[in-house]
Length: 539
Image (tube, rainbow, N blue to C red):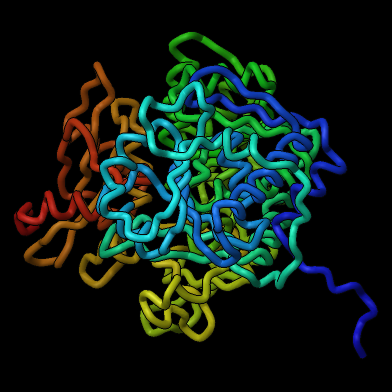
């Protein structure tokens, strides 16, 4: 028997329409590229998004077409999130930190018909423009007063000024494509993940849940995680859904700028990668600053060291939530909130749970499998290849790149993980980074986390190098803190009693800096290339 419920499509435009109606006077604050602070409300944003949708139509852009952006977190980028998808087109947010040739590839592969960009990226866009085959319109995201002289580009604010807000968001199938985000492409060309309206709205529901990001209309949220990468972890959608105040940081993510914005705008929640929080904590320590409103921070992108969790919680009273996900997962998969029994543990035992990547939120199913594809138990000990499935997880890549990626209906994440009996998942490696020594697996991430705990170490990476007897053995590649000294033997002694003896790294190499990808993650691929001729004596 059919249920007698209305069948209303889940559309992104419904989020901002809801925010206008129910949270119309709630602020959206942006630190702008031009300098200064921009303030307006959800009602203002909705008005401008409707005018922008009309402007897109006036430029001849049609439903289904892709529109590229190269922009920081700000109010204009937010308007594009809603205007492009809301009118039925597809927003393709591009990571400006990628190599120039990768940006060209993405823009051409997506067949973007227009490109919206912040003034920061003017020189980059003008350099790449001759190679961009499908772009018909270049729009500089600024006002006329900040347009460069003689520029042939369209002016964002002038486009909006020409239009009225008399625009009704169209209704269409909720499985219509809404946004396109490409992987960072550490090997080969980047691949596109195409999100639908349905998957995006469901993901926003999941992100807002109490045991996920726990968002509400009482929050002031600072998304440091960029809008050009994996939907800024859904914050522009989920905050709109619940009516939270949003604070966009613009291009300045140094510790001083982020701290000032947190204090000025009474931020209660922020989200970003460990490198940003390291700069923030260093600024706090140098100036003996304290937070007056920040309650919690979501940390993802790469593993958060236990020392950072302790610093936030013990030193500043800010609760840390580890999160994990992927571009292909919209991106949220797990969040490290505590259950009742974990909350009753001692402080160090709690930190050990928080250092894991967290437990799956409703909408994400997980399992781990061995190399033969057989499912492994959730015992917190066995680790295997992590597989996921759910309504906001990709079933393939844009234009069929990479072929059929699913395995029996599950998406292979490329991560190696354990899952404990309470459902807490912990990444032990990327499958391509796992160290296999004498037929057994060693977790490079566990070894890295121990190295970072040493007070003289600023950053560390662990890779496997060739060994004549054991095939591979781990070595530590580390960066010392300024003014700190530690020897190879001292660092190796620091591991004693913390790991199995056969996990002990065979060597330590100190370097001035470690290589990173465009999204700020350690580039193990680059490190392995740098150390491919490194040899260990047989032990």
